[in-house]
Image 1 (cartoon, rainbow, N blue to C red):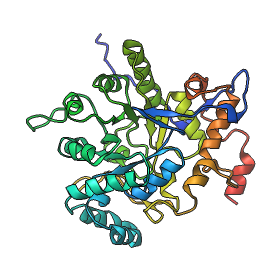
Image 2 (spheres, rainbow, N blue to C red):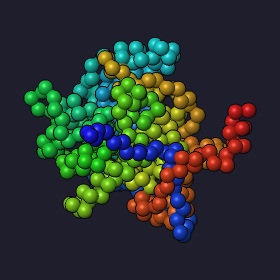
Image 3 (cartoon, rainbow, N blue to C red):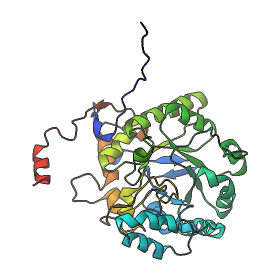
Image 4 (cartoon, rainbow, N blue to C red):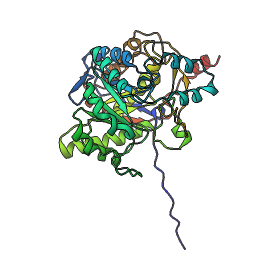
Length: 381
């Protein structure tokens, strides 16, 4: 009798399915160290703002730097297509839900200008901030030299899925080993979700790796393509690659969990899963400093043939300072994210992010509902 061979599925976990176990001793939150290093750059807090047009413009990048974190400007967005994109952003904000994607597709047909790439970098530098900018692999070879010449500090090479090996019809696609011979600034690469792909990318010499495919609030890759891995499992796998690479070479390459992070609890679970930093879009899009006027859309939303994103309404209901440091009267964990991280680290007895990565985590699908019947009753009354 023939025994059929079935594809085996492994279990993967998202934020709402796991919980952090308190430590055997505790420390005061003010005693913890939260720093993140990318190349030679040190950041006081391990928080990054996503390279999305509705989130980061040069002024936002400056304000984020003052808050101790890092914001990345999308060099293939409206900031490098228009001298002043204010009118276009207002048109997107005023559009109906059905019209928004069409308007974005039209807006992104304007050509990217070399002079604006250099101008945006210089605007960030003029404000005293670390200038971090983002390009997709398709355009990195063309514009990376301009980015470095303009004075950028960090280049993020980012697409929905990035691998060290890629086949295409072009004579030669982007090769990171050749890129690093032409530019000397640190390069952050994303996005990945697995051990092998992350390890291969680290071996090319990158400064950091972004983790996450499709979890963002404005991204629809999981619906359109069916591709993605829940963020807790993705972070655990990529952290294993980082640790393996560190044992192999002695070089520590931080991983940054990117997308789907909404609350302080989500932030903390990222770090216990193994992250060195977190990158967020929607929470920052809701700040008064963000340029999106209370709206937010993913980088693939304006794609001419297969949009993999949508405009979402986040409102304008906080500031960079309140989001990161409070004070807050919200009880849902969506403000004072740095305070939440410090408190959780203290409860786990972790002095550093590296120690927090060693905290125990359990599978707990009822963690957000156990004993919360009165909260749910009030929410629906």
